[in-house]
Length: 354
Image (tube, rainbow, N blue to C red; front, side):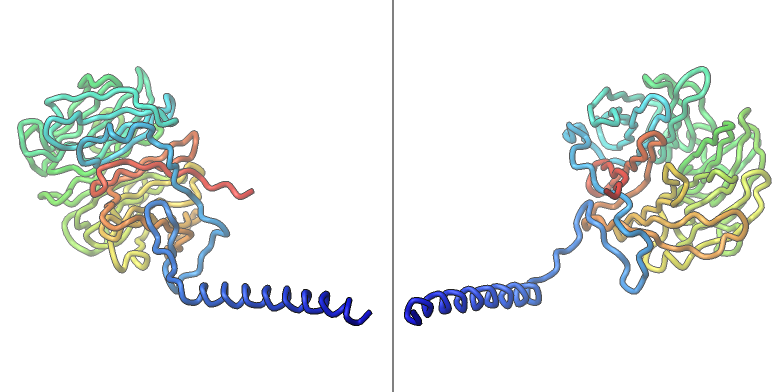
């Protein structure tokens, strides 16, 4: 009887030894193998900073666009029509269409070009009467440069602000020098950051009739001063956020009167903000950092004191991508990133926790 049981005992011991060997092997591999470096669309977090979100807030949509070969130039800006679900992409280059149009599902719709756009920098899509339109800031030095232009959906020039081809700082007549970006609020006020490395370093608010409501700024690093104000957005409680890129900070102003409300600098020790937008639910500020290839999500402060910035999440992009400006879909919540280094636009969608 003992002879019959002995093989069973050996078999059990053998199985236990095999399981132990597998466990030890896996532990050794975990210690020896390097951690995968973050690439495009993967999340990475600052060492030493507490992560607020339980999961990554956004994830890369690998299926957008369906025809990436349509990107033929350097992609500088992206904007989303809030009604028609059209994604506009602005690109630069010789003999390339300046504006590409995609659906939010990734299908290519059309492209258009015009000699009145020299070097597109920032774009913004609106859907107000009499129809949808696209605003383009032009930093070119030719006869149409240093202007902000409004186009129809099909590319017809509707309006031009500034003195075409003549850089300047006057408010009457209104002049720009390399205007970086324009943001248009729900009540059709225009907020313009004027100074992508030109003469001006200022924030201008225009009323719906294009009259100057107020202006803030000059070159410097003090309160209400700027060094390359590069992007602007307005939150749902009437605060204007400016990406003061050269000074490595966000500055905040009251939308009604232009009063300075505060600044955030502690989140930008290694690179300044290139773009600033709000997520569709107004919970986070999306900030692109061009030189370190990163997107940051900063918690929006409540009404009252601006306080200090808190990083809720980050997305570390691959080296050389260079995220320049960002657009947001108010319907789907998707984030579109214009990448001048990768010569493409990418889509990130909300990462819903199951």
